[in-house]
Length: 245
Image (cartoon, rainbow, N blue to C red):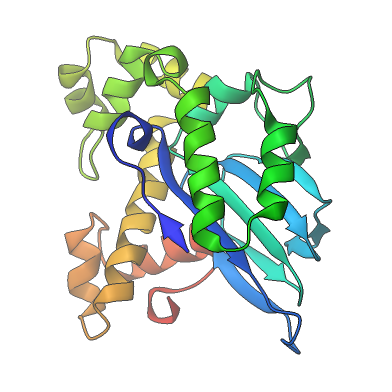
């Protein structure tokens, strides 16, 4: 189950979610985690969950910035919930970049009451109750103006699938070099790398709801030079092809 926050919280979070696999399920459930240049916090409440080949411990886990797609596998009995940040937000929250999923401790970020939240989530009987708990906590924990510098927030809002670096500097009162440094510090990506991920992400979202479209037309619609270019980018970033989304 997924909830998309509104207002100020929506400026920081793509979504708040909860999921589980029943004990009666005989096979694990595997899903693709497509890259979106974002990261998040995962509450691993019960069962066994793997991202790629890595088995996650129980607890509150900070996820690294997603630059390439991975597979998540949920074994029978798994219970988890989480929140997904918009790009760059995790650096403001954690105070550092992570290279792999990491248990949140007092040495990572300045988040309060996570132990109490985790214990409460374990007692909640349904998806909606868990989402409500996380939403209430996030409203107290996060303030947009205290996490992202205004110049970065503006650059992320203005950057477009087709925008060149020169066009971006016309919208944001920073030089091209300053914008590049800002993206490198907060996202560990260049603006061009971020645009590549954004382009593939939005094309995936479109293809999921438009099954009968011409892929050549989609490639042009989302700023790829042609269908072959779109296929190469999908393989590099999403580890799949447009026809298999």
